[in-house]
Image (tube, rainbow, N blue to C red; front, side, top):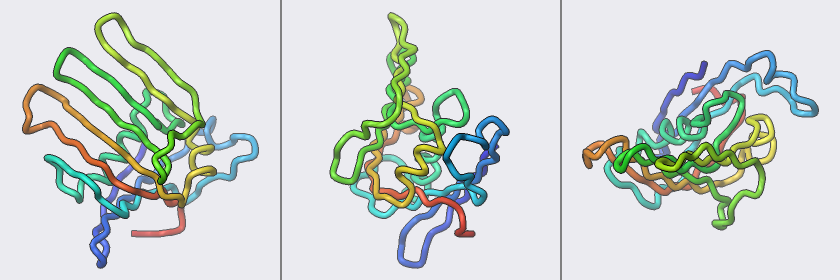
Length: 165
């Protein structure tokens, strides 16, 4: 179970915190220290935003990072379609725009719909990328109603534990 909290910092940055409760199977990964304080997202720069409040972006990034159906994974890439209007496209890149080579690909596509993911274990993601600047691109269209569609491109960091809101 994960809770997401959002805080607007005095310098205009938006901060969100997602606390996760580790499942016993996830808690004992070999060679990876536990994350007792959970993790949260800090949006450092907003390059482009359409049809969404900037204060909501950290919560949306946290939700997209947890998008894969199995807990214990972080989603680095998502491309899903359901019908012709329901589309989700999300990708996490390094700060210089390169793809993250880590993780595994999962393709659950059918002849009508696309369901492609690139995922990696949460503990491995936090060990490699916590504190680093990453770029997130997202386009989400939950229906044909344009009022519900949104997109953004931001630079963010994932911060592990220790910082209370």
